[in-house]
Length: 295
Image (spheres, rainbow, N blue to C red):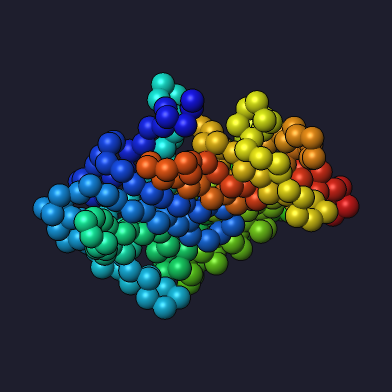
């Protein structure tokens, strides 16, 4: 059974393992909000637990993020043997504590993807006349401390309404980097999110991939999808490489068919149990197309 062909890798700072048992829950979306990861690590030695607990981390502090240091990388990859094992979460460690229920002791860890960039990063920069949308987006990404991702590719076709793709009189950004990025993207017809420490730009309402992932009972769909609104649905599936926020999926089930965009996904796994898959929040592609038609 595919259940018993699972493969995973966990990294916390310098520590990494491909065989220690763990549970994880990862939440990511196309919205401009941090991704999150809750991770439990079992079977660690007392020395390994002490080393991980001593690692620096970024801690949430109210609505912002308290920067303790440059941060410790928390990364989780999950998939199946002999298949691609994609990184499902890469961010900064923000909490770590030890739990004990005799005879077992384990660590509970949590991480945030893009927390500092979204909640705390500031930008103060003036761009010269005839600066392109791309260069402004790159400048803001640099201030946020995230990778530029697909900025060059996506911004190539972006324009500022009737004035084209250049800020003829220059442009000044000052204050919250996330707010500045939202403002530029809104003007250029784009939406943004941070995925595994990298900026993802999408033309508003469009998908991150051109081809759709087929979801049917024979291709990874688990149970029956549920219609949650006129244009929205929920579905569960196996871990599928390439499935990410913004991806297209083609639902093919008895109760629901159609092309949808993944707006949010929650990935969960327990290496010692049955749970190992994804829960998807979906919005019909026809909904986005109708909005573009009547805009």
